[in-house]
Structures are given as C-alpha cells and as structure tokens.
Image (cartoon, rainbow over all chains, first blue to last red):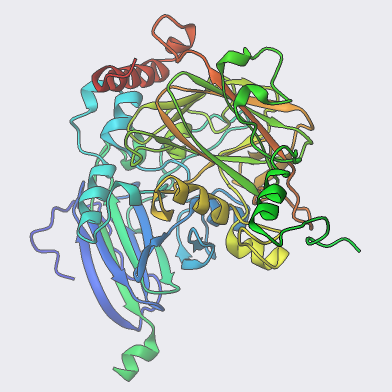
Length: 230
Length: 283
C-alpha cells in the first residue's frame, strides 16, 4: 500500500489483512476521514476493515450485487444468532434470510447493530438544529449508493463496526466511548457477490469516532488457491 | 360428505348470481367491518361516528391502510398470540418511513411504550404510542423470516399455513405501490424481547389476551401490518392468533399538549413534524 499523500499521525496503525494473508490482494484502499467507499466483493473473497486511528465508526451496508433489493437485514441477522452484537462467526443475513457475508475475524467485542447511521435530520433531534448543516453518514450513503443506482429507499439499518452501543437493563441505550484501538480489524467473507457501501462517520457530536474522524483501510483478499490458479 | 360444491346451485348465470349474493351477509372469524361503525367489536369508548377502520386480521394475515393525521389506531391481541409487525410511511412521500434505529437511538431507549414517538429517517414523528397495556414489544428481531419459516414450518409463502413476515409485508407493500426495496425493519407489538448485557436476545412472549396498544398518526400515514410469529418465538408450531384493529378520528399532538415537550428530543421531533405539516398545508 502506498500511503503517500494520505493524512496520517504517528499513532495510526495501518494494519494488514486479517485473513487470506498469503492469498491474492484484490483491492487495498483508504477511506478518507468523513468520506464514503463502496466496492463489489466477490463470493469467497474477504474484506478486512482496519480501524487505523481507533474508535472510528465504519457505518456499513451490504447488498446482493446481482439484486440490490436483497440487502442486509439487521432483524434476521440478530434473530438468527439471538444476540444484538456481532462477534466472530456472525452471519450477515439478507431480508430474504440468506447469508451475505460471514464475520471470519474480529478484534473488537460487541460490534454494533443498533445505532444506525447519523443524519442531518436525526442530528436536529439529538443535538439541535444548529448541527443540521454538518456532514453525516446518511449523506455518505446516499452519495455513494447513487453510484450504484441506490437511493433513500435502499437505506436500511446498518452495522457500525468499531462503535459501542450498550443496552442497559431498563432499555437505556446510547453511543458511548469505543472499545476499539488503532489497528483493530474486522474481516468479512462474502458468501455471494456483494456490494459493500461504507460511510466513514463524520459525526462530531458523540464519541462514535472519538470526536476525531480518522481513516479506514479496506483490503480485499482472495484465498490462496485463487492466487495459485491465477 | 361436505365439499366446496355442496349447497351451491350455479348451472345458470342467474343461479350463480343468486348463489353469490346469498353469501354477502355471512360473517367470518376474521374480516373487515365496513363501514367501520358496524364493527361488532367497536370499543365502548370509541364514538361510532368517528370510526374509520375496523378489521380482525387473521393469524398469518396482513392489513394495510392509509390514515389521516390525527387518526388513533388501536391494536388488540384478542387471544394472546397476536404479533403485530408494523411499518409506517409518510403517505405523501413513502420514501420517508419508519426508522427503528433512530426511534431507539434518538430517545435513548430500546423498548418503546407509552409516549415513545415512532420516528422516520427524516427526523419527524410518524406516530406516537399513546396507550399500552401489554409492554411486551420488540424493535429488534422482527417477524419470522422466509428462510426460517421454510426451515421450521416447511413453507413461507402467503398461501401456505406458515407465511413469513416478508411474504405478508411484500403483499401489503404491493397493494400500496411499494416493493421490497421500500421495506425497512419493523416494530413488533404483543411479543416482547429484552437484551441482556452481553447482547443476548431474550424472548418474553405475550402479556396475554386482551392487551391493547394505540398509536396516534402524527402525519398522513400508510400502515402495513403483518400478523406473523415473532422471529424468536420458540414454539414448534406456527403460532399466531387474530389481531383486531379499530381506528378513529382524534387529534394529532400539538404544541399545547404535555406530550410535546417531555424531553428536548421529543420537542424537536414534534416541532420538525409540525414544520412539515404546516408547509405541506395539512391541517
């Protein structure tokens, strides 16, 4: 990876692929702080997301590449595993109940499925109307999704990798200080060809990114046998 | 032996017409009551003249409706095994729809009950929960999925004995010109879930027969209701009983209502809603 021209800090940890480490690197890109990213991940390939600066929420949506009406369903995903948080082995299910991706590696406990994406609109409720002109994840999702023909109808409850949302006994919930750190990773194997859309959260009113948006690194790798056959 | 043919004489058009018309006043266990004030189950506290929707939805069935701002909708779990999965849309612009994540996050609360606004993704209140004798609800896991219904019950389609939430919502959506792309996560009334500190989802079931929940439409709404088993309902048989719905004209939440300013988040949510209603020219 060539990091020339990329904003960096001495405490960043750029990491490396979490699985398929001897396989073929299909893609290795940086998502700038506050920016968006998308790519097709082929069946069998694995996407590693590196939390370069630590506690940077990677807002994440995934669709079947062949039919984007088939998309991540938080309800089916957490109902099937009977747990609200994602840990290694979690299978991201679609609205039809079939597998989209599997979490094959995870270095942060309790990955969030609850908090959804920040938006200018919800910022008006959470922090006041003075925050409405701040950039937000929903803007990123809409802009990035538009490149693939997706619009507001296609935005559903998303995953927030590296974000921490506890639910207390009385139902109180909220985004609190993160459990991640520089260089922490998740790795997701595609169970079919999928479209992944990510917002590198720009929110500046809560600790979802430690009040300091930092880059994400996205690495897609193929298993070893594909590299051999290539 | 009785068959569907028994007692039908339909060998001429006139006979077929008489046969069809003779069926018109029959009653079914599950059916809409039209007009709504003819409902045999109209609640005592509902003025008959105000009733706008009355229906008993079968277990494994669905309902859909457009209602005006200010409509109050009562759901009743008649037999104790209903599960009303609900999705709401702004009837003017259905791209604005229920956002469960915002509904939980903005109000810092995972378990909606009385007073909890159901938010759209546009920072507005689609409806407010205004009555709740059940407190067994869920905004996490949703209805049984198609894959799960096939695996557990052998079928998931609407005509089967075990329709999935997806099958029912799909049809309800189509009736309103919407498709699966328009379907966000839903909220479930009458079957509860609690989240343990490690994230584990604990199914708490129903509060029993006769429980009611009422929501108040704060915007013109399209409602889609799927009465399907909860995804975490552990029972081996496909189990869901009838859901009764009554709706009547009431008043939306306005600035002079105590509900408006219970928390700063709710006050801004109702203000945003009023802002839309005013500029859209809706009373």
